[in-house]
Length: 297
Image 1 (tube, rainbow, N blue to C red):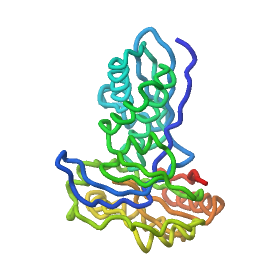
Image 2 (image 1 turned 120 degrees about the vertical axis):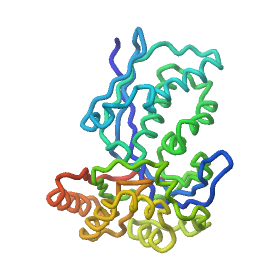
Image 3 (image 1 turned 135 degrees about the horizontal axis):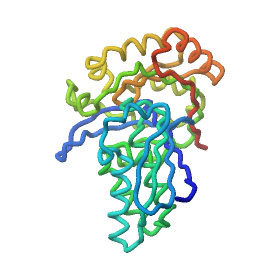
Image 4 (image 1 turned 90 degrees about the vertical axis):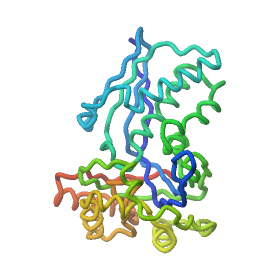
């Protein structure tokens, strides 16, 4: 087996998430503003005589009872191979390693980011550029967040998550991510929604936001996470997490995705690191980290 080539699967943070309806295919219509952090899982890919899949890393134990065929990494590999077969592109056996750094089922796109990194990595490993468009079109079949994670840059997504508009002029944001070590089922959270036809994101207003303070104030006034209330009813520790973040004086505290990870936005990384240190001192049983998101010109 050759040496592995590693691909980043950065954490996705939903700064806002509006649920605006439900489609005939069962997917909910959403509108979300998403950014990507400088932390995440990693996918290692190398040539091999037979296909293999292995999970390692500090959060690997959370997936110990999962059948490999249920993991989005394996499903992404199999989808990729199906697409390449349709395009007569060889897809020989590969050894894939998932270095699991993010908590599972935590609302920051871990599994979807892993699938996206697998698709991007195998596209390079199998020299599959000719099938890139077909792969992007099929990615949503792995999950609504996968197309966003394939883009892996500040964006606004709509539809089920597959309609993506890049977000320009986005500054880097200093964040603290906090998870109370509770796995949240995304289907259960959507099922618990009391209202599914909520107002969409504002049509304008994002242009001209240049600082973390600008973004936090605009997000607070104009946006929300429509999944936060239903997720907190199912997992009350989310409210504890938000309350703990609020004690560190963030510019904004909110839940990401379907939870249970919550985030705080801070003026700079010094403030974020100090807040993370304070929270870890008080809640060593939680997963807490300071991180910075990518910017766009």
